[in-house]
Length: 225
Image (cartoon, rainbow, N blue to C red):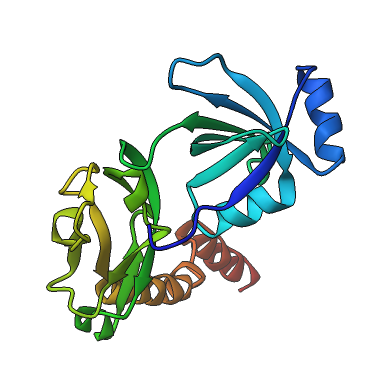
């Protein structure tokens, strides 16, 4: 890791349950549990603002000090979100050492525009936003840079991504990271269809003469004579 592992102070949680967890969050504390390395799960709480700020930066590893004691290296294992899915309400942490190999999901940072996306009617799409990696804890990157400038053709797959030494992609190598889709033909087809629909009312609204009504008008004319 090229970044420094942040140190977080944690407090033990004596009471568990949804109601007490909600009380902690109203006080700016984020409920968490520390697992792993043969020790009993340890329910704790950490400063919510500090933890969320680190998570947004793509950090995965923390030094956790429980009640001012000895710090433990912990990896973020799972995040629990609220029912709207827009806020973190609980964090699962697991004890690790820096030379331990782990599997983590790391955010992708797309840069550049491929030549194939500069064509008329071409749209560049990113199929996935994270990549699953296998590496040592010390080598976990905050994000993975994906340079699309040298992308060949209309699709870039996981297998074509150049990763730093020590990083191995666990995701399917055939998954598309990005692709270029042409929408010109589809738009032309829609225009043709629209034109046909616009022309149709002229035929539908043309007045058609009723033969029976015309015959009736002729009989009336003969009687008048």
